Image: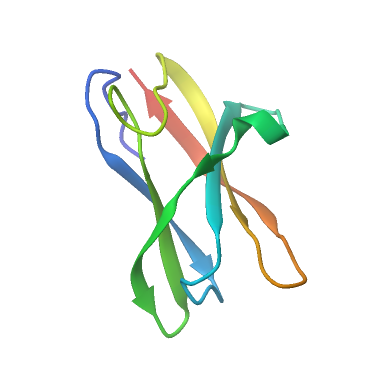
Length: 96
């Protein structure tokens, strides 16, 4: 992923295979090598539904759901289903 300016306010997306787009979805950002704690999770939303899954998104930056300072973060997604609640790392997000 290309670096994102800490001054901008974009949506960041991640594709979740098998998601219907109706489940509650959350996204977290951690330091590289760390797992998210309960306080790290932020409510996200679904976009771009397909037969194979859906894209989860969250607005980051000043005025967004979460503001990240300069650094590289690991993005995580958590989907809450009726029985399962998978937590999946999505990849690094560089903020400059």
